[in-house]
Length: 455
Image (cartoon, rainbow, N blue to C red; front, side):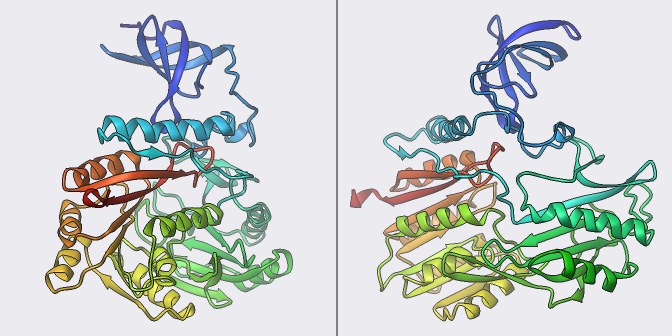
C-alpha cells in the first residue's frame, strides 16, 4: 500500500477507461490521469487503497515513444473531451483493437472470432458535425466553451480541433452579439439569466449550418439582427433557432423550438441517402466514419432481394434506410417517438416505401411482432450502451434468422450479448471496430453473427 501525498516513480503499462494511465510501482497498481503507455512518471498519491492507488503526475521522467504534441491549446487540457490526444493516432487505433480483443476473450469467453484492426480516419480532426457549448458569466466576462473535467465550470475556447472549423467563426459572432446587446447569461446555481447554450449542426456534404441558442425563456434580444450577421459571415448558414429550456436540468435542449430564420432544418447525406436534421434530431456526429460503419453493417447483412430485416433500436432509421435499398422489407423498432418521426420523414425523402417503423420498447414490440407472425431472416441490432434486452435476444433466437448484425458502442456489453447468443446456437464470426471518436477511448464495433448449424 502506497502512502498518500508521497511521491513515487511509476511505469505506465496500459490505458484504462476514461483514458486514465495504468501504472505499476513494484507490482502495485497506480491509476494516473494523463499517463501514456511506456511513460515513466513521478506521481504524487492522492488516494491510497489496499489494492490500488490514484495519483497525479508531478514530472515526466521518460516520455513514451508514443507521446505526441497536443493538437489543441493547453488552455483546454482539462476540458475532458479528448482523453488520449497526446497518444500517437496509430497507437490509439491499436489500443482500441486490443480493447475489443480483450473484452471478447475476458467477458465473452469467445474463441475463433476474427477481430479486424480498427478502421481509423485519414484526418482524425474536425470530424464532429454537432457542437454543444455551455455559456457562463465568469467575473463579468462571457465564456463560451466546454465544461472542465468533473465540474460545471466552463473553460473558454475560440477553437476546438475535433469540431467543424465553422464553429470558430460562430463562437466569435455569438460573443459579439452577447456583448453588443448585453444578453443575460444563465446561472445554473440560481436558475436566473437567460442564455444557456450554443448548439451548432453542420451538414458535411451539403455545408448547411444550423445555429441553436438555448434559453431559459422564450425571448432573446435582436435575434433577427443576429441572423443577418450569421447570414453575411457564415458560409452555408441556413437556419437560426431559439430552443426554450426553462427546466432545472443538465439536459441541454428543451422540447420547444422557435424558428427565427430559415425553416429550422438542415439536410445532410450518408452515402446516397439524404437525412433531414432538426434541433432535436439525433444524427451520428461523425458522418465520415458513420458511412464506413453502415457499409460494414450492409456487407455483413449479405442482403438478397427477397430478404426481410428487423432493425432493432433503429433510432432515426439511418441503418434501416441503408438496408431498405437492398431488402424486400425492413421493420424499424425504436422507443423514442421523435426519432421515429424523423425516420418516417427520411424514408419519404429517399422514396423508400418498403420500411415500417414501430414506436415502443424493443423488449415489448419485438416479441409481440414475432407472436403475430412477423419474422425476418436478417436481424440488425444497434442498442444503447447497456446492450440488448434479454427478451430481444430470446426472440431473435426463436425467430432463427440466417444472419444477425450487431452494431455496438460498448465492447463490454457486446461481448456479454455475443456470449448469450453463442450459448443459443449463434456464433460471432468476425468483428470490425471503427474509430468514430478519434482522441477518445470510445470505439464502435460491427459484428457478424451466423447460425452455428450453417458453419
